[in-house]
Image (cartoon, rainbow, N blue to C red):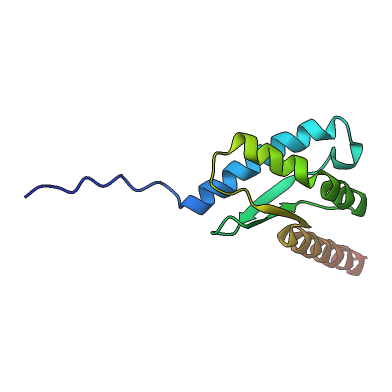
Length: 125
């Protein structure tokens, strides 16, 4: 009996690889653009979530001040162009930018813990 000649399974799914590749390319391009525009200089991409059909991708940031969001809107075409030049795919998604809700939730939990710790310390006196 002949064994089938399938390709070995990749360590993680295709969309995870696409998201990681987009993350890398966009982070490099933002670093380059940050040299000329201080509004995006300190932005940190936490995650890229691309739709399976590659029509849309959400780029999540650790924080996204209003002036940075405005700058990203102005730079959208440049960022999509960087993806087009560096990623050889059938379609390049339309990018949308947002603050990462997980980071915000983590900050709220951390602040609640700090308050509880201060109240606990105040009760000892």
